[in-house]
Amino acid sequence: MLKLSAKTLNKIINILSPLMEDERNRRPFLVLALGNDLPVLQYINWSGAVASFIPDMLCKLIDYGEVASEKQAIWVLLEYVRSQVGPDVKQCINNLRPLLDVCSVSSVGTDKKSIDAIVQEVRERLHNNIQAWYGEIPLWAVNRRVSLSDLFVDVNILDEVSSSRRSELDDLWQDFTTNNSNYRSLDRIGLGKKQQRVPDLSLIEERNTNLVVVGKPGSGKTTYLQRIVTECNAGKLQAQRIPVLIQMRYFIDDGSDYAYNLDQFLEQLWGLGNIDVKLVLNQGRALILLDGLDEVTGEAGKQIIKEIKRFARFYPLVQIVVTCRTQTLLDLFDWQSQRFTCVEVADFNEEQVRAFVAKWFGAVCADAKQRETKTRELLEQLFREENKPIQELAITPILLSLICIVFHQTGKFYSKRSKLYKEGLELFLKQWDEKRGIDRDEIYRDLSLDRKLELLSFLAVKKFEKQQYVLFEGEELEEYIKAFLGVERRDSQRVLRAIESQHGLLIERLQNVWSFSHLTFQEYLVAKWFCDYEQFDDLSKYIIQPHWREVFLLSIEIVKNPELLFLK
Image 1 (cartoon, one colour):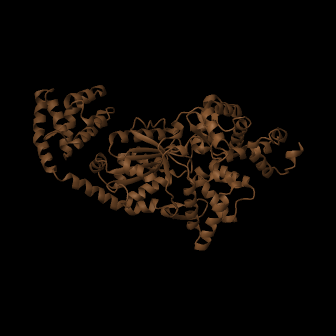
Image 2 (cartoon, rainbow, N blue to C red):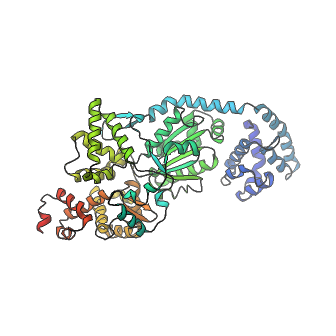
């Protein structure tokens, strides 16, 4: 690869600038110069000011190298320019030829060593910091941090995002009613059990493609990226690359000093000059992990998303992994046109639940005997038939952590299961984003916790009173929200998307087909609605319907005087 001095590069820029002012002429001009089938052309961003376009275009051509035997792409371009310009410019180009030849000869055999040395130097410099930043994770609701390896359970990835798939609502309802006798989880509605699950790290190692990873709140997306960055840091994964994990909620502040320009941010982080950073990126020697795209909002968020798109276009050999709570929030990102593959974090299966519980008590209990006893007792109780509603919650790390905490402190599950469900809802509605310092820029955030619970209870009841009591169409949900809050349809759509992205309590199962994240939460919210408003006459109408059984059991726990349920 050529190594040009700044002086030589500036001379080439001055020659090309008059020919590249008009964005519409740039691609046709390079096609005439280099041919239409040169692969490097697809990686060039043709828009933008000429002062930024030409340097980036030249970097791509220099990095590409020869288009024919001993003919560098950049020199082929200059030869074409020479055929189109006057004598003075021709002479300038002629004067450049010896400089390009010298650069070409002097760089032979040195580039690979140079780039390897740069990458190794940066990896060594950042190694201890990466381990300190990401080698531990906080143990939720327990005042301590533990080693990532002590708690992390390998996750599975679904190759196809559920909300992008199409199916008829009636078919899904049939699927649910057919399988409901064996398993209550709404996530079994035509989803995970039929989809191929891929081991988490194989996506990074084997496919070597850009990824968008979506998943529910608390499903383990951040921890997954911490696993990737620490494995790369240890040389066990993508050892030829420099690993970088950027958490978007911090980048809003940290990146503002660089106008959210990732190149400049990496210069500062790596301690390299602009030329070396571009060399690393053009050679694809970086693994860039961007956590929490949904956590950047407002004008800064739009600017950051625009920058990620630019970065992906300019450096197609760099592997980028982005996490986001929902696919809906990726509309602005337009991941498909940026050559990203969208995948989804799968819910825990029974094997993963058992592994997580064992690791959780291993991290909390110093005494080995106590650790083994509590693990065994929790799992025995969790998988009893009468605790299937609690099993349903144990499919994500955050709710399984809550279950472990309760059991650790009490030696059993709450005698009133409604207390566990209440804490689980409040965890999502209030504590999770607050604990991580995330401030959502949505109309929904102005509602109080009680008002949010009222809204969710209203939605739960509206659906549960119907014969098909689980699945909503999108328009149906929006109408319910509009009626309850007294807002316009457009605002009800925003509220629905906010509930999905902030809490994941309502999720899009398939395209335009929604449900509560857990049937357990829906049943609790239905019971809460009737008890809060003391509508026991209305509730009593459903006493003989089988799917209302859990609602009645929860209502008996919630209401202060259970006799009221049967007196009215």
